[in-house]
Structure formats: C-alpha cells, structure tokens
Amino acid sequence: MRMRPANFKVIQVLPAILPVVLAAVCGCTWPGGGEDEHPAPPAIGLWQAGPDPLAAEKGRAYSEAGGGLFITLADFEDRPGGLTGRQQVGYFRLDPPGPGNKLSFGQAGGRTGKGCMAFAIQGGCRLRMIVRADRDIFTGHTLLEMAVESSAFRDDFRICLASAKGQRFSPPMLLVPGWNDVAVDLRKPAAADGDFDLGSVKEIILSFDDPEPFEGRLDDVMLLDNRRQISPCPAGWTVGKQGLDYSIISPDGQFRLDVVRSADGLWRLGENQTLLALAGPAQTQPAFAERLELMGLKRLGRFSLTESNAVRMRFQSRWYFPSAARQWASLAVNYVSWDYTLYRDGRLITTLEVNGSAGRPVGPVSIKPPGRAAWASGQIADRLVQKDLVLPVGRWSFLQAGGAKAEKFLSNFAAPGSLVPLIALPGAFSQGDLDRDGFDESQGCYFLAGIGGVCRAVVKPPKGGLLNPAFRIALGASGGADVNIEGLAIRQQAVLPDGSVVFIVPGLIDRPMLLEACVRLDDAGRQTP
Image 1 (cartoon, one colour):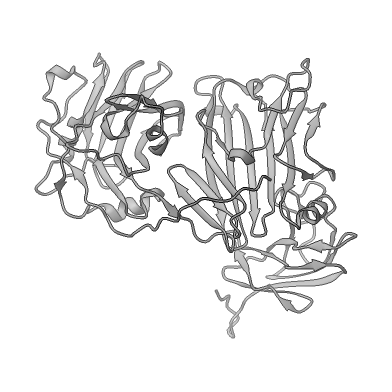
Image 2 (image 1 turned 45 degrees about the vertical axis):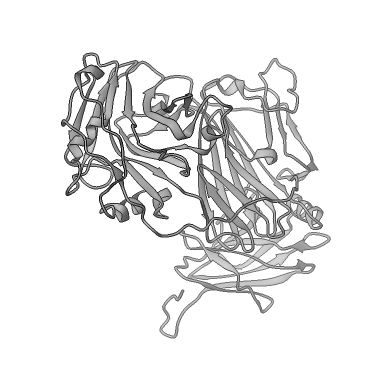
C-alpha cells in the first residue's frame, strides 16, 4: 500500500437543529401544465418556522441527517403559520407537460410525517424543482438528499443541479421497490472547472435516462452538512465522512485510505485502488490498467460501511454493469464486488469477486494491487494473472500491509498455521474459509464456533511464528466475552450483531498456545455487557 502523509481536518458536528427553510406559495396542486399556466414560486427566503417538528424523525430516518445539520427544502407537511404540504407541490414543474404527466399531493404514507408528493411521468419528461432563493443556500452543505419511492427497479435515475453558469448531472442511481434515500455530493460540483456555480443553483431536476414511464412519490428534499467522524472505529484510527466519500487515517498519520465515488459512479480507493483488467477468450493478457468493458458499458455503484469497531472495520463496494432495462428484477446482472477488512494494525484484506453470469466469457484476468500482496493461493507477488478463469464467478482474496511488520503479515497470510479445536462446534467453518482449515481468507482471521458459549483451541503457529493473529469466534454473545491465551487476558474486543466476538492476540506466537473464550456471565448466570 502506498504511504503518504495525511492531511485531514477533524470537523466537530454539533447536535443543533438548523431552522427549516421553506416559503409560502400560492396555489395548491396541478397536473403537468406549462410554466405559463402557473404563477412562479416565490423566493425561498429565510422564513422562520421555529424548530422543525419532524427533525427528530428525519434524524432517525436518514443516517446522514442524524447530526442535525440540515435544512428542508420540501417535506410536504402542513406548518402552522406557514405553507401547507399541498402548497409545497407548487415548487415543482413537469417538463414537458404532456398527457399522462401529473403531480399530486399525497396526504398519507410519506417517508417521514404524513405528506408527500406523487408524480407520474412519461418517457422524456423531467421533474423540475424551482429554487428561487434570495441568497445562496447550497454553499456550506455537502449533500442534497431526498426520498424517492419506486414501484419497480430502475437503474437510470439521475439528479441534475442547474446553476446560472451550467449544469451538473449525478451518475445514474439505482432505485429499488419501496422508498429509496438518494443523495448528490455537493462538494464535487462545487469544484468543477468554471461552468458550474453551486452558489447560484436555480433548479433541481429529476430525470430518467430510459424512455419508460415512471410512477412514484417524493418526500424530504434536504440540504445537509454531514461532515463528521465515525465512531467507534479501529483503535487510534481516524475515520471521517464528507459528502459520499470516506477518509481513513492511520494512528501515525502516514497512511491514508480515501474511499471516493468516481465520475462513473463507482467507488474506488483512490491511489490504493487495485487495478482489475478483464479480457475476452481470444484476447491477449491486458496491460496492468483498469479494463472493464467486457462486463458492460453501463455502470452503477453502491458502497456500504458494514462494520466498524475498535478491532477492525469492513466495507463493500459493488460495481454493477446492467445491460438491459429491468434486468434487476431477475438479478441477472454482471457485477464486481470488493469486500475490504481493515485491522487496527494496518492489515488490509481484499476479497474480489467477478460475476459475469449475464455477460460474455472471460479470458485472462489481471489483478494488480498498489504493492506486494499475499494471496489466498499461498503466493506473495505484486500481481496475479489468471489465464484459465471459468465464469460465471471468480473469487480472490489477498492481504496488503505496510511498515516494518509487513513481511511477517504477508507470510502469515500465505501460510497461516492451524487450529486444533478442543471445545468447538464440529464442521463449523466461515464462508470465506476456502480450504476449511479454520482460517477465513476473506477476512484475514481464524474462525471457531463455540458450544454453549464456550470455545477452546490450540493455536499452532507456522514456522517463524504468528504475529498479531485475528480471531472471530461465534459464541452467541449479547455482551462481552472473557478471552485469554495461555492465561493472558485479551481485553480489546468487539461483539458483532450475530453474537461473534472479534479480537487480535497481540505479539508473536512462536509455539502452540491454548486459546479460551466464553461469554461473560454475572453471579446469576446471565450474560453481562
């Protein structure tokens, strides 16, 4: 992994609730008519409605609004002394109007509260929200977020911000049946090269690339400032989020991992992104640069932080390559999945899965991490080339590490040693344990399943010793666990939602050692935190 100094500003998120920004509007609701048929919406001034009565509900419903730093542009709720939910529909226009295009106020079933806006559009129609603010209300916020309810899978949804100097379209986004929380990162348009001005946004435009009719509902159009630190996280690390991107900084500040949404809508790890190149059966081995055309030209990405605690954090980046409309309904879609596990000592394990079940056969596959890596196959190399891949699915796991301990981490992953279970559920293996030896290559840790909340095993290190081995033990724990190795207590641990306990045994194991773990009980035999 490349090492470079971190330059990250810690931002304190205050638990204050900003006032809701709304304005009175004339008229009620209308079908899709031309702009001349309706009065222009008045300016969105700083109309003070007092504290947002739905602020707490929005904070619970939207993870990015939990810090309280947001303003609401439209939520279709009636406000005493202000505009009604029905009047807020007046901010929206259908372009072009046309038969079959319509807007209406919904009095029940919103994403939060009671009100929402229902809309139906035919192919080529766009839904425009007119923003006539008397001052800049976008600058200083990092996200535009809204809730869109869909009755079907759509992977062609876009949001456009139209300013006085130009437009910026989001990458296509996936809508699934039900309510979807969709967001646009406002920081990237603000850094565009001169033809877009975030401070003069006049319209928010919702559209679909494919000419198919759409019926759905809209709720809670908000501007948010979601800059914050994420806690808990691996001990000593700093994990920050701004907009849709993450920054992960090592304790010594020498390593920074940036998780960034690229222009094509796919999340990558910046300069630490592993390069994947795919070639067809009759093609030669591709050069070591990203090459994904074989999966499909249409791209859509999703990212999720799945685990973060004092021991490790895990996150997943999915790259989808749909080739036909409504392909999501049968899940017959090509995809590339990147699953990452980062331990507090800097080990980064990547599990890459290439699923080409909906595409053409794949020939040579080239995988090039940014540095040397240890592979689940047992080799240590800076690249892997597989010429005989048989799809639909190919899967690889590898470890990267930096610093003085890197070589030991690499060798331990390539030859992890073994476990001798003494009290453990027979035949219980983690899904990522490729050869059923007790070591989960996909997460870089040993796995055991206890019996009745108790587990005991002998750890047998490989030649040269085992450094800082990580473990995940399924104990059914609801609180903490008592863990020791040769009587030495392991106190830094984390309990996962499935009742597993994860921890690292610090130091070098150079001989067989007894590992014991059991759920923590009080005097009455009940589990304790």
